[in-house]
Length: 94
Image: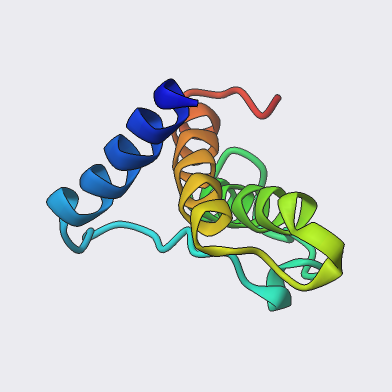
């Protein structure tokens, strides 16, 4: 239980310490659940959409009882979206 608390505190501290980003927003959104990624594969726009969709899919998959994601789910999903974006820019989408 203690490692989970330390991890949660670290995630929250990282969110507040990082401040606003100048890059894409990876906050989960209902509108990204069904929006297709029509950008040319490999483009920055494609990777941004891929990261946003990954974030949203992660958040809503973790949502308990279909009520929507909680704060921690949203924070972890945002981080996963950022990682997916970086992976995509390096040429990997899996």
